[in-house]
Image 1: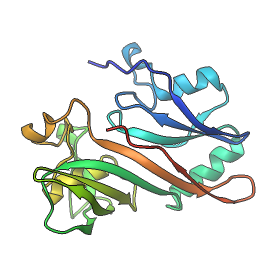
Image 2: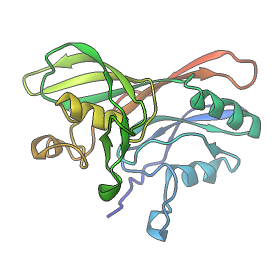
Image 3: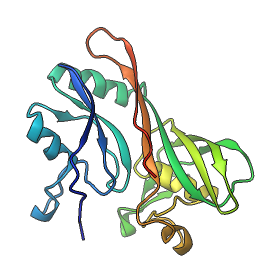
Length: 213
């Protein structure tokens, strides 16, 4: 059952061209098809800034930084940066266990597992290329905090890649085993930083939203 948090969306930055906001975990990025799924980040932002237009999405269970355009030019300009993989993103995640290595790169092609959608799966024949760099920030005997740098933006990419690494994300209701899923009442995945060029002038910008778990 969809039960989104009722806290106000945190505005990180705004200018005449775009907004930076902090999406809370548990809130849809865009509305679903049924009336019960209409409450989302997009409608909440537009209630305060009617001309705001969504450019990209985060999974409902993921928290963190998102950018909204305020003009058609900004929407097109920043959207093309996402499409051309010019936007740099980092995420923070808590994963189950301790990887053998302290860092690495995961290159595993992904595709929707249609009989079990919305699940995604690794498929070397027809999957789309997906690449994630990762490194350990800190660890204890059972949980590791990692910094994730996706080079592509496939659906559920970070969740599946951590699963394939053998260390699912805590609280992930789709991919984690029972122990990792039960370790938290929310998924420990947070969009931490976002880098792109300003749509008016091209200046390089970096924004950061602190992790809340």
